[in-house]
Length: 124
Image (cartoon, rainbow, N blue to C red; front, side, top):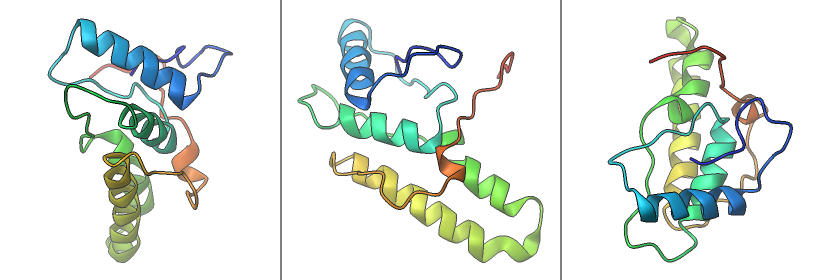
């Protein structure tokens, strides 16, 4: 997604992220792209904004960090947390499902899911 960058003092609105990302995709469409360390909520709001406009293709989500982060932190290696992890996964999956219709609002999200996931120097 096209954002000002994790270390930028400027924050873009979901509509701005959608506009610039879609402009880029119209010029060069990669098979996949990542949310770049945005929080789960930021990535979901931005994806939602992209799906509100007319697109020549479907813009969807992957099962990467923006879907798994809260689940992994909730679990923390503790098997007794399975129910809580399942609930967290359902919340994220429902939120991302709503983005496909352009109907996600961000209401009721946990503070954990609003925290950015950028790690300076992180490589895949």
